[in-house]
Amino acid sequence: MAMPEIVTTMLGASGVGKTTLLTSIYEQFSKIKEVNFEFTPDPDTEEILQKNLRDLQSMEDKVIAKEGERGIEGTRAVAGPESLPEFAFYLSKRERQLLKLSFRDYPGSYVLKDNPKGRQYLKSLLQESTAAIISIDTPAMIEPHKPDSLNRKNWDLLKDKSGRWHNAKNHPEEILSLFKSAYTNLKEPKLVILAPVKCETYVQTPESATKLLGCIKDKYSPLLKFLSDPSRKDNIAVVTTPIQTVGCLFFSHYFIEDFNKPRFVFKKNNSMDTYNPKDSDHLLRYLLSFLLKRHNDQQIYQRSPILRSVRDIFHQQSIFEEAVKQFAKTRKSTDGFAILQGRELLEIKE
Image (tube, rainbow, N blue to C red; front, side, top):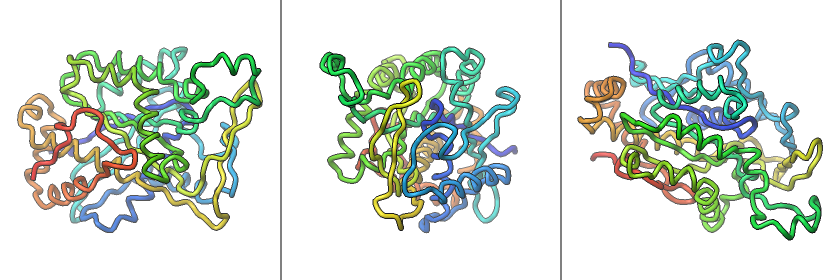
């Protein structure tokens, strides 16, 4: 029997942090002591992520987010979508690989409406994928307009003084359009994860994390409304998972330069602080919760050959199933983590 593969789309425009998020998942999982199974990358994936990890670990006390000058290099397609790398991980027990998790990244320009070939690729990828992770540039979504960088008259006329750069950086309208094209006639359940990254500044207290959650619901309300439509609501689970993708850098301020583009500045609170991502494992816990629920849903597996294969693996490997279940059960549900829709699709059978 061929190894079942679960595909997840990393959804987001250029510079929002898709590749950094994958790197933090890779780095943090290796440190979790509670896990009684392996989560290991294939050699090509490990080579890419190790390079990214070295770049992130060498960050200075102050980082200016400017595309092409700082941070890790984004995913490129030198010869079109067919040349894109696959980020592949294997869930294993006792050195036997049982389940393949593929995370598909791509150049952020594919999200934009002026790239029809890229958007067609993403539509097909979303239809193929069991889950989609929407990476959200948190400072761009939250930080307000700055009166000192705008004409005062225009500032007074603005109704929404928060998240000035949200549309320009996160492209929520383009993201919504992609979901509308891909999720019109769902044949099996999907998991949508809204993952704010670069969010260290906004999750340090329960109060600030609650505000972050409220901001997500507000800024992505059109998408949430579409996903909750009665025609598809029962087939879609939606969760929020704020990920501190670096852990040691906090938003400081932004300034404007070069064709009215923002440059976000991040600083360490202490020069001795080092790269230390937090909570990326909980994103994986939600993904595995979704798969475990599907494992227990006979009707769904009859309709989906891929999920039927997953179910067979869990049935044959009860020790592996129990290890994955214990890991998934400890997912976070506070501090900005929340199930916005489809709780029944994430329930884990005892």
